[in-house]
Image (cartoon, rainbow, N blue to C red):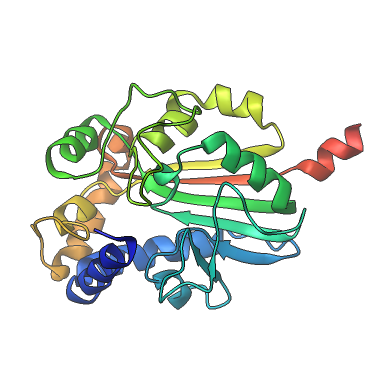
Length: 250
């Protein structure tokens, strides 16, 4: 399947699955609230069929290759932006598709303005979601992979991935990341999507709950928040460029 074919299928699912649509709009609003007001544009890397623009109209939509929905073709590991020229980099369900995370972080640290942010929404591997991902999701989920090293199993196609990447980098081996990029401060890590998302079936799975269940499921999720590390299917991570602070010390 080509990237465009996969995105057309997702666009169809977006139109046909109101519960999925409502959940992603909620997450998009969370992203909007966390954007930096630093100088520069807000760029979404791997923007898919462009749904984030409904919530953030000014976002620049990009993908690794030209698509009918993107404004630009941009490789996250070799971005065409000047130093300190970008206010925000947003990655929704994209971080786990990066073959060379070190290269991405080097590029992100270069292009972000002081105070700029990286906002990542990605799969999270809790004990429950890891089993579900491995049984019911076509994408690879490998918690034994090195957190920050190049992945030879990713890169041949934009659809290749390791869904465990964000869990490895920002939760299990956060200290490795912080030692490597002290200028990219981790200012928030949040696990979410405990019930409603897995029961929605996502973009391609079996739907186990109607859209009308959103309210009751959200209420139950609030009660289950203490168990999020055990149940969560998604995580939200926010990094901030602190280069100016480091320069003042030097």
